[in-house]
Amino acid sequence: MDLTLKIWRQANTKAKGKMVDYKVTGVSPDSSFFEMLDVLNQSIIEEGGDPVAFDHDCREGICGTCSLYINGRPHGPDSGITTCQLHMRKFKSGDTIYIEPWRAKAFPIIKDLIVNRGAYDEIIQAGGYISVNTGGVPDANAIPIPKVDSDTAMDAASCIGCGACVATCKNASAMLFVAAKVSQFAHLPQGKIEAKRRVQNMVATMDELGFGNCSNTYACEQECPKEISVSHIAKMNREFFAAKLCADVKDI
Image 1 (cartoon, rainbow, N blue to C red):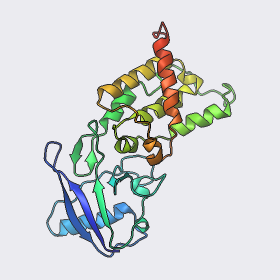
Image 2 (image 1 turned 120 degrees about the vertical axis):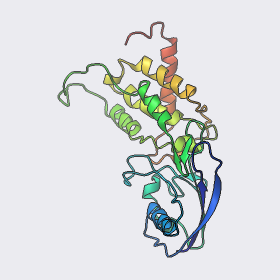
Image 3 (image 1 turned 30 degrees about the vertical axis):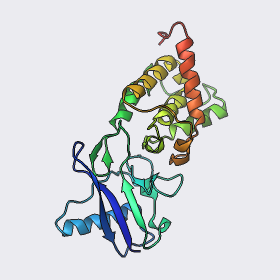
Image 4 (image 1 turned 45 degrees about the horizontal axis):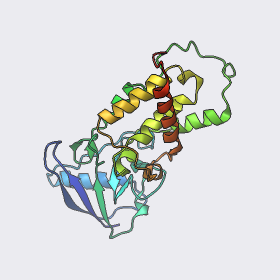
């Protein structure tokens, strides 16, 4: 496969960026998207240039660091996968591929295709955890949990925090991410003790960091590599309104 790549290059957060054209030839359709970029970078290095900076870690679709905007879609043209799981057979020889970083105020560009997603960490630090003493590991049957609740909590917990929901939302909203982290605890008894503080603090932090509000286009659900449902946003809203209506939220 012979391809034309139009890649966003930006030296640092404050520098002015631009799209730069590159040619790659002889790409195997069975190679991954990152293997193709590795081939490109090798050729750039051999010519004495600065290789394209992009983020990745596990290459197994579980860490969420491979945040690339490819041909107008987060993680590329396939569905239910991360960029590291994308293969070149999804493209045709002769194609022009546009590769950009996430675009969001809360995700400033570090260099080229790498963005700072530390805002997600701040949201988690605001309440996305259980800090109360829940004791030792109980017997599996000691705390009966309806299967529908456990399944829903597990579905929410599958969020890998990649930021695709933010990148695809016209308002750069982090609602799906925050909702998943709130919902995974809200459906379990261990998470109910700190529920009021959790949802209020996480939503407040999300707003403070500059994320937009939900656009209700369901684009986040469509582009989420783990196919997390927007129904979790409804759950988060219910949790948030219930916490606001409660007279005493300092029960935690």
